[in-house]
Image 1 (tube, rainbow, N blue to C red):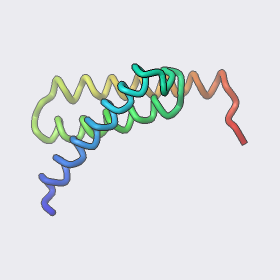
Image 2 (cartoon, helix red, strand yellow):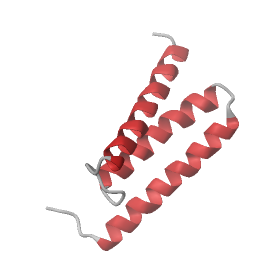
Image 3 (cartoon, one colour):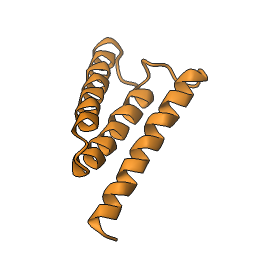
Image 4 (cartoon, rainbow, N blue to C red):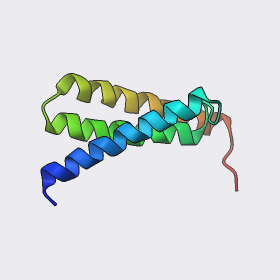
Length: 86
């Protein structure tokens, strides 16, 4: 597999993760304050950052860096306000 193909696949995986997270949020299967929802967005955005950066789409890359930052910020707030299970 070529590097370009791997980056394309990573971008598509990122898209699927973000869309699945949004679908699950919209249908009430996940809360915006759930760790799973936020991690799906963070990992999905990372895939977009890699793909869009590789392809020179800087506005998309910057948008997704910010998207990741929001996700990490929310995960930090969740961690501070809710103790971990176990």
